Length: 196
Image (cartoon, rainbow, N blue to C red; front, side, top):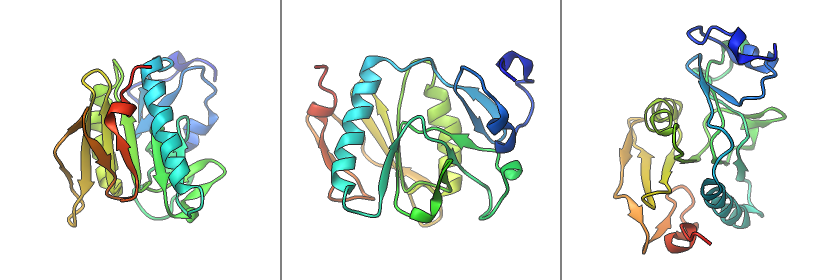
């Protein structure tokens, strides 16, 4: 199957279906529904993604935690052990940190990463702030950053003891931001949002 137009976009699909597709467009599945990914990200999006990824990689290079950047499949099953036919959410976060090596396999990550960073782009705001927010919360992602490049702000959500996200004060230019999951990771937002 080479064209996404051959699919019923209102249908429900599993990871087993996803593995059979060979489309040029990148897709994500959220609760079995197809979400087209934005075309190739803008330069600003990629600059921010690379700065975050490289800073996190330097911090983690001698640790068990690993950092991954999109495209990288994260499968979020609803229960501990499921076959590909029983997984209905497959996302490609811009940046994610996985501290449990048993979650990594040759296809990507199965289970919630410890920390996910999504960078907003035109056309993906609703998906990142609504649909993905819900599945990240439900699957147990401990820390979720939403980066808004145009306004140069980062929204931080942390998982509480009841398994619900709560927001902290947004961070913006002029501040240094520290990860809760990795407290020795800090980033100067002036440098992160630098347009050079």
